Image 1: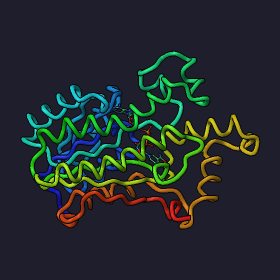
Image 2: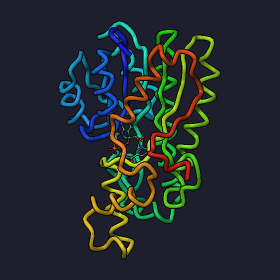
Image 3: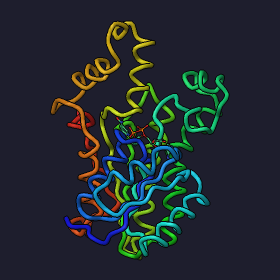
Image 4: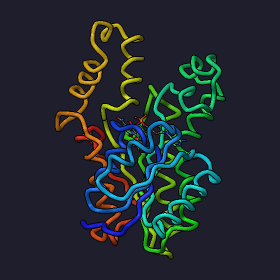
Length: 274
Ligand SMILES: NC(=O)c1ccc[n+]([C@@H]2O[C@H](COP(=O)([O-])OP(=O)(O)OC[C@H]3O[C@@H](n4cnc5c(N)ncnc54)[C@H](O)[C@@H]3O)[C@@H](O)[C@H]2O)c1
């Protein structure tokens, strides 16, 4: 699946142990040129320079068409075009202040009771990010390119613990199909991946909350909380890795998938089949 000379932009890819950085490594291993974007300026350059390929780190809010438009322009200035967008940026759980949309502590607390503002914020983090980034990128992307959306298994059924997150990710699944039709005339394919359970910052925070709120987890480390959830829910056994997600993203973006568009695949060890 040689992607030499393809230019790939991945949103939310700054954290070294995040899914986005794993996707970036997979594209770099196939010799693509990679643009790492994130909100956090302190991590984008380091992650970009760690890749074994030509790479660029840019700060850009994936939920802003203007910011992503600038990132796309800088990508085209440096690498001469854009072939692949991976919409990875997302926030699962009570991390509002970390992404600087709402610094009001009361809003964070209200996330569990779900205030209107918290609901709106979750939809912005997890659905508008895909809409805004795709809009900005599709306007200038090469015909024949590819968009890969990262949703979640929370999109595929009820998400009682994370209702707004689940609804937003279900929106990503739907938008995948709409954009696949809207961009088909330009042979831009749009596909979706639903990851299962991965030990990233997102799950570190979720496990911290579960430990604090559920007595059965009170005496466990947060890693043990995560491993318990994985063991209970995953038919194949074991967690997924960022590379498990990145390998499918690379396949979707390659010529091997030239007739695949509007599709949704869970990379979850069978969780969503149960
Ligand atoms: N970890 C899991 O188990 C899991 C499961 C299913 C789906 N996902 C999805 O995978 C994606 C990556 O998750 P992760 O676990 O690596 O999360 P993470 O919290 O470890 O990393 C997310 C990254 O996205 C960045 N980000 C957030 N909002 C942004 C924005 N508006 N613009 C630019 N960057 C932004 C953050 O700064 C961070 O670097 C998310 O969309 C998440 O919902 C994760």
